[in-house]
Length: 298
Image (cartoon, rainbow, N blue to C red):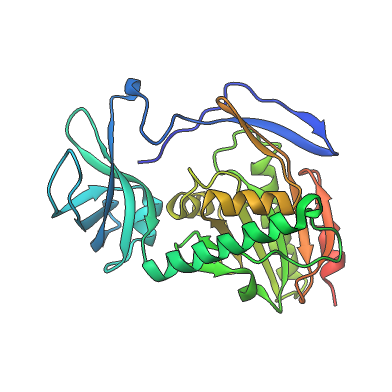
């Protein structure tokens, strides 16, 4: 069950040569009373997965104010069902409908080792941003920031794992409804992936980091990638702690500001060489695959 995100008003303006767009956002995790749903935090272990019914059977701990610890099944989104793995620990939001039906949303991996890695990397990234100060923005020739986050399959990925590859990186928001913004950027990334493959370029990795990790969990990103027809063999959609993403936005010079129900954001696409150095950057979504293919050829 995914939180809906609406955009009744779109704002497009020029900001530092980048397109600025407003995308609506739904209410907080606690849920607005008007939606008729009750929400509770839940942690537990996945016992089994039924992808035909989009169901997870979870052995969960006691849910304060609702139920004791037990094993039961929950409806989940297709993306969450697709990446669910028996034996894995999760944390999620349990949603109770007026009818009493139970489902899970905002499902995150809850492996302690993975969490420790990501939290440690987040602290290092914060320190790096603070030390860089006003010079946090990474110019052409500078290296990729160190990060450790989750991909669309719930796996931990870090910047070091892409060393030795050319990397094309941007930021998107899965619920952005303006076809000129995030949807256009994703289509351009897909076209570049295809063109690079046709040109015999085998060491390209594409990465899209979410503007809104609060909403874009691994399962949401998995559904987005599948719905967009993305070949994820060398295209990762990435999410993680809000502070980590905010620091990456600063270091890439990306604007992402929540103003009431709107998210205003800018766009940029960055190419790194095999040593992890920035070699090319475009602003907005009005670029073509050829802009990067010339830089990718040997």
